[in-house]
Image (tube, rainbow, N blue to C red; front, side, top):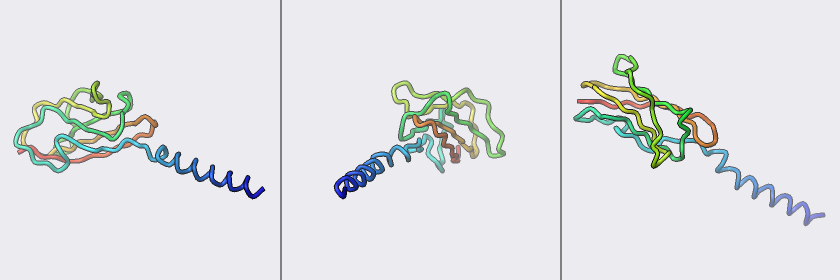
Length: 122
């Protein structure tokens, strides 16, 4: 009986260890261009966000707001075909000022994550 309980205990620990990475597998922002807090000389033509995992196009967005908080009219963010962990948003006509980039994405696990950061155009 003791051997059976040891096997059950070992199997339970093994299952917990193997399942723990899956429980924490949420899309996390790894890199942004322009970078958070960056001061850039020229206005970017696009915002590119790189995540730690593939993201789902249907549930992923990027918005850009000016210093007054007014959301700029832009197109829809698109997932990079060559690397589905990258989300792109074309932007045009950014003048000097500070901008807030807000993002929301869903990874393969379906959990939605969101965040924001600022960058400045000189």
